[in-house]
Length: 308
Image (tube, rainbow, N blue to C red; front, side, top):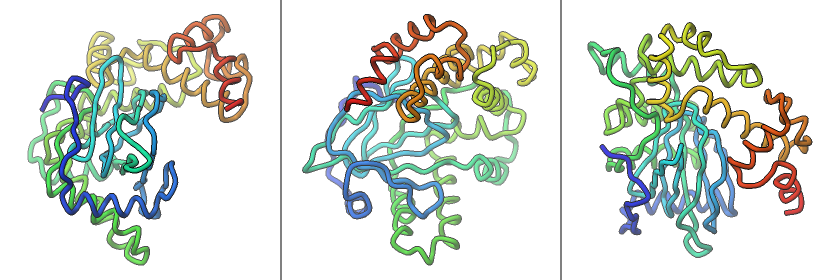
């Protein structure tokens, strides 16, 4: 299955009944633009009435699709478009840019996302795979594939539980497990299995990523990461890049810059303090790298956000 790039046009399809039902449900629960975290654990709805410039985001292990509209994810210069006919998965934590590419007041972007549970994936892998191979080549932990009817119906049944709160404690775990099963047995199942199998290269890289996120303000020592992953330096670089499309140092830089931006825009921390908190020792280096990533110097970005 090939990734869908910006060169692949996404034209509005004739919606099947399940898609129309999902769109109507999201409209009811998202009367205004924004995100709604539902009472179903891990399930969120999204609505947007305008297209927008790319915004930075940290995507955790997630399944996402549309009921209406289209969206683009950009990761290290590569683009992934998806709409109601396609779904996107991220099998690990990845810093990326997100952009709604088709939306209007009359036909808003209506999206749904489900957090993926590593424990559920690992349990299902053991049940459906007799002899998992740990030496399979690592694949990028982000991809797009076509929605199947079974997957679309499963998403709709999970979303409908929002209207039946009394059923959530019993049925939500069952339907969520089914969703994970559909993903694991679908076109992108290998992307999920590679990070779930104990001892696999993907599983070890996830450990490294968790360490980087927890210690983002510390200097990155490749030997330390290689030891954590039980890999050589060259093997660590190879598998880390295969899964994330960037090196560990590039990953840490994007993570630091996104966290610094959050501190400035959301917590109103000044640029110097934000830079220091995420591990920058040189304010000038922080300013250069911030501008390279976000297009404006940190102070000007914070001022523009505060005045908007």
